[in-house]
Structure formats: C-alpha cells, structure tokens
Length: 496
Image (tube, rainbow, N blue to C red; front, side):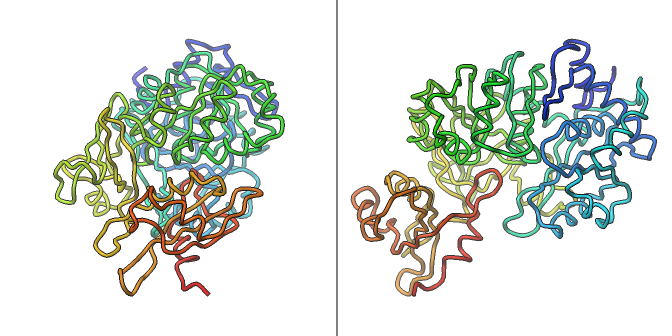
C-alpha cells in the first residue's frame, strides 16, 4: 500500500479491526470491514464517472454514513472532499460549489431540488440511487497511484460572516497531524463510543472528534440533528464514552428534567468548542461526575490550536488552554514583535497551506510562516492562553481599548444573564462606547441600570457599557460563536 493519505484509513482499520463496529446510524451499523468495502465500491464508481486526482467532490446533507464514505472514497482517489454547510442559503451554497469547481455532488434527499438546479455536472442522491451506485461499484483495488500526505484532501469553507466564504485547503498531513494531536492531548482510547450530533460539515465535529475516533478504531454514533432528550437516551443505549458539542448544546442537556438521574456513567470525556464553557456549566456537570475537555481552534488549523484539559477545566476556566503537542503559538503586536497582549499566531503541521484560489488572502493570513488567527490573546504565568477578543471587534473609546469578550464574561456572572454580546456604538464624545445586548435567563428579571451597576468595581469605568438592549436571542454560528456583524446591524442604532 503506497497510499498514506486519509483515504487509506478504511483499509488500515479493516485489516486491524475488521469486525469492530465503525458506524451506527438510525438502527443501521457497519463494521470496519463493511465500511471499507462500501467505500471501495463508491471509489470505483467515482473513478468510472471520471473523478480523478485533484477533482473536487462535495457532500451536502446532515450526519450520515454516506458523508464518511464519500470523504474516504474521494481521498482514496487523490481527489478533494468539499463538505457543505446545510445551513447556508442557496446562493451561498452555489458560491461554494462554483468557487471550488465541484464536479460531483453527493446529497441527501432534502436537497434534491437544489441539486437539480445547482449547475454541478453530476449528482447522486443518498438513498436508492446511492445504494445502487455502491452495490454496482465492485470491490478490490481502486488505483495503483500513491496519495502523499502533502496532497490536498479537503476544502472546508469558513463561515463567511464578513464577506463571501473562503475555502481553507487542508492536506492529508494537516488532517493526520490534527488527529495525532487530538489523540495525544485528548487521550482517546480504542474502545471509544463517540456521539456526534453536531454537524460534521463543521471542522470541530469532523476533525477533532470523528476522525480521531476512527483512527483509534472506536465507534461513531451519528445523529442527523441534536435533541437534548434523545442525547440522554443515546448515551444510555449505546454506552457513549465521548460527547462533543458547543456550550449551548451542553446547557440544553443540563436543563433536561431527567438530567440529574440519567445514567451517564459510561461518559469519559465531554469535548466542547466554539466558546469557553461558563463556570456555572462546569459545576453542573461536575455534580454528575463529568468534566469538560475544551478546545480552541479554527478551520484553517484543521482546527486544533489549543486544548484545556479536564484536570484544569475549573482552575483555568475561561482559558483556551495550552498549544497542542505538535503546535506552537506566539502573541504579537501589530509590528510582529512578541507582546503580553496581542494577536495570537500559530504554526504547526496541522495548519493549512492557504485558501483555495485566493493567493492575496493567503499572503495576508500568514506572517513568516505563522498563521494570523485574528484573535487577541494573553497568557498567564503558567502559559495558559485566554482569548480576550477578535482583533476586528476591538472597541476604542476615548483612546482606551475595550475588549468585548472581557465585558461579556463579567456580564455572564450575573445570574439574570442567559446570553450576552457587547458591541461598539457611535458616541459624540468618546468616538464609540460599549453597548450590551442581553438575553435574560429563563424566569429572570433585571433592569439595565442594575445590570450595569453590578459591573462597577469589577471593571474599569470606561469598559462598562453605556447602554443595554434586551433581546429574545442572539445569532450564533453552527459552532456557537456570536455573529457580531449581525448583532451590530440589529442593535447599533439609536435607542428610542
């Protein structure tokens, strides 16, 4: 076997643990041997219809075994897998397809109408048509052509909250090294049963949870959507050992009436990303004997940059942790000099080579080989990093820098605050000042004045927002990040 890419993983797992369960989905399960056979048959079909090295093959749909089979079959041919975000609007999906030059789209039936008019030359619907393709694909060797670790494996599109989405090009090496980092720092075992109800088209669910579990030979329980009640059912039924989600998902699970009595004894680790886990949520799960492993990263880093281990989850609450084993970071000022507070930059074998078809954007994203995260960070005396804000979200009020994330963290400590965001709004005297957009916790009530008064003495006066707007909810991305551009558009106007 001269293939060292991700596409070889099914064959390597099938020869080591052929009879172990690889995937469980809606009552159907596949062993590693069966999954490898299905992947091989699909790869043969892709080859028959003209897919070759470097061609792009996309998948559009929720978590499903066909997602993984398409990924591995595409990688097996040296082609490039493009997972598409099902939450995007149709024009955004068409942009991703056209921008990457997808030649074949695999999709679930929910997207039949879109697929028929998307302009992609070939489409395959998951269901009878897909099973026919797999059944007729044959088995045996696919290609006697090596796939190198440096070859392109995947194009993952960023959220595109500030303009059109960019495609981060991830190599087989990027994905492999990210999995190695996760196995080393996350202590994955070969008998893991990993529940995936967060969408795999996002980099954290796919690359931080799914692929490392697969690499170790664990079992993946795939859910097409998230339900807190069903999550508790699945944990009990399948004896789930690993759960992944964003803080909002774990909050909804903890709010379930039967959460205090649910059998969670099988769970070894809860992996969380997208935002820091509030201390109150950490305590809720610690009361059940469970601890969080928190990750910080981005699509361009495959995505792991830092990890906060369970032993330090409470002591370093709010921290992003320390860099992954095979990875390095620096904090720099605008001139690129090391600084106590500044932009976090990262380097390592998991970091992408660049954006698809965007050489200027690629050049702007790197400084001397270090990727610019766009996040402002500080490090404590133990080397644990805390992300204090986005560079572009910085509020400059009367010449003073205000980092909204710091203010948001203080607001979250108030028991009446369920969610919040701080944005800058124009001010005749100071240039701009802070405004808090607050979602009250269920059943809570507090006035704007009382909320702001609670910050007095805890934050410098210039950091305390000058106004408060109450909202029913705040827009967040699929990974749980606040969508600040949308919040600014909705709440930065004059108050009546």
